[in-house]
Length: 317
Image 1 (tube, rainbow, N blue to C red):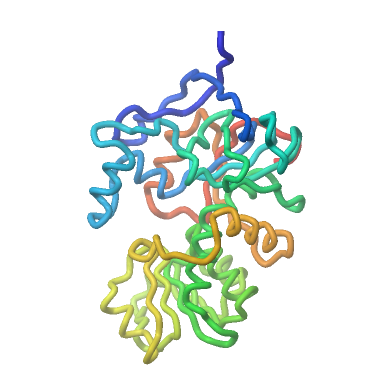
Image 2: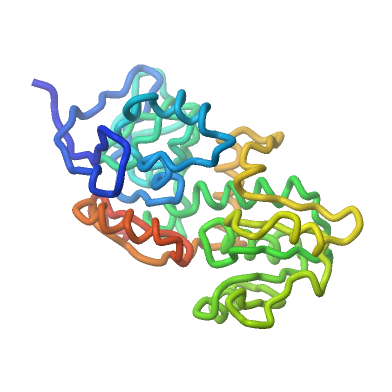
């Protein structure tokens, strides 16, 4: 009899309640694969949208074909994770059993909501930075890669002014840190009242409260306007740009290409974590048993940074 593991599965689209804990077959690594014992994963807005199938209209047909027309094709969500290599296939040379790793599952059929996950050796899998926990490592993957990709694509220069709308979210909080610490840009961050203080501490030169009665972005112009939550009216955003300025929307430009592979992006994120250029913001930590509560929380749209799910306990929380 094959060995089993625990996983959170969903067999139909719907509210958080469609998620449930289930015993499923534990994967076995092929010759060129790595088996990872998962310590931590996350709940992202992407996980929530896939679960509920609430995707942008422009992406509806592609998403339906990719995710499953009538029911989910990939029944285990989880787009990023961190853990320890449990075993490797006979042809694997990059990793060995016992290596602490973190990874993106985006190109490997997701699957972070489980106790184990197999990756191809050349997949988006890298050695975990030693200066952060497994929870922080899991939360450092997707949002950081997205923020980094957007910032590189703007070709923003030192001293230029960038406005980051939605600066308290996972992508936004990383973008603030990277724009300041990596690109040496002047950052104006936009968030709600309760987030002003800690977002300012991330390095923003100026922080604006979008809930304030006198909140008007168009009074100042910027070299880059990055809407990290895709909630600010695009026509108004363009009014806040300098001539030749760049507008980016985390949804509309999500598939923007870079010269880096997914693995190279992850390796770059690792370097930035190790050098202290940024650290993920963790809002709340849930257990696998609390996955429904975690999805409800993320779905409200007010999380501060990242939401982490502890899969297995470790000595490096």
